[in-house]
Image 1 (cartoon, rainbow, N blue to C red):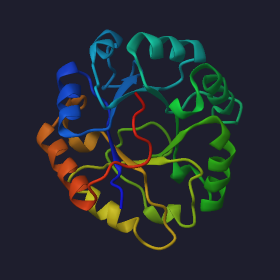
Image 2 (cartoon, helix red, strand yellow):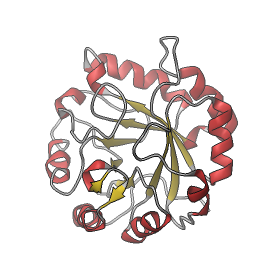
Image 3 (spheres, rainbow, N blue to C red):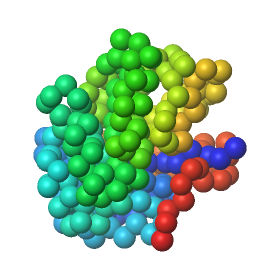
Image 4 (cartoon, rainbow, N blue to C red):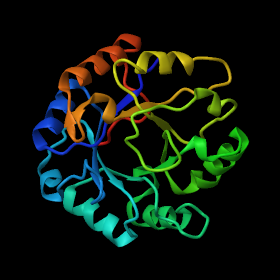
Length: 234
């Protein structure tokens, strides 16, 4: 069984980004949202040399031109649309489509919040609707935003099949990750292609606890030694 990818998000320093990469993180997440306590300085992000990891920019509300400009300035490999990109009831579908044209589908991660939906069928319908305009999907806790420090009931995903590789987020860290991964082994539940964590491996917002990151990597590698899904293309 291939191991899940690991994304460490909310990084605010070049040193911590490098340390997370050296510990085995596959994806390094940098938040570009001014009101976030984990907002990253674009100048810092541009200095990060990620080696075999991918740099992911997390965007909230920014327009297409701003996302594309920061992608090029910071050398981002992927962009994550974390809400606020659509005010027309389509939850950012048009923005996703425009970014696919500008950057390519495989570089787009679209976030969904299962707790927003009245049923797993409604969530499934939205996942399928967005499949043509994103390469990856991320399922997070709450009904918007991120960094809540809590998870969501895996039962909300009963019968759901993601049409794209997907990441699981929501209160994940060394104390919660094993139980969540075990829960998603139940019949009828989808297995994530990767896990995304931020507050669950912090001493304070934007300050990563590298010992906890190390523990997470130990948990991931003890379950399955191989990298999951798409290898980084050189």
